[in-house]
Length: 302
Image: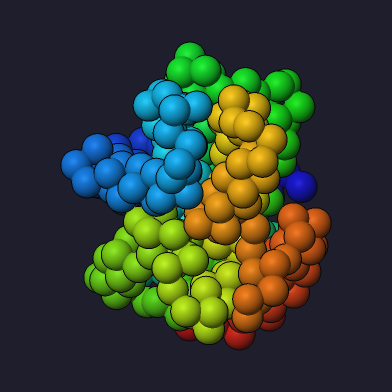
């Protein structure tokens, strides 16, 4: 246990002390933030205005903007789960390139302890940083009129913990095969470019075909982002719906839920939040032993 805690602490400290790595961890969320205010917000607002056609007199600009901002925050958190995890785990590649890992493997510390320390440090750093982003974002939404309860904050923390661990475990498998930081950096560029589309941060997944939508939902990060989006949007959506006449209320809520994918789906069939969370946990349960086996095979002395 002492070896595990020592290695985990060391990994976290190396990540935090490298300011450039921390910056690049947040680069994709920062770019998404800029893109949102440049043109993505107009796209989100246009989607909401299509749903509320004929109900404009009941809703204010603030009501509509709040829903769009909640969708945007879910995209920021989904991207952060991936990019922060990846950058913390890149230390594993750096240690391999500099032969640091050979010094560790020469000690009595088991390989399972070593890989678990990398995974834990990545999940811990990702969880703490995304919790900070979520707290600030939800605070801003509450200042704008959204109503989140303490239970909502606890559920958000649970989703971010699930997303941090699952994202770190899946990405760790990819990083296991990289032997240089240049290769790792190239993959990071690809991940940054694609992740926003895969989790629905740039455009809703409902814009894609059922096949593409279903493939995206195979990734745990996409499932967790959908759960986060559902939690964030529910409060402003509920407040807006209460202002509508009863006949248009259900139509508006269903239009927003379908248009912005507040539930995952498989080949057009909606998947409940409970099934989505169960799927992510099953993937996590399968991934961890696979990681241990791959680490023993790929990391050897000599």
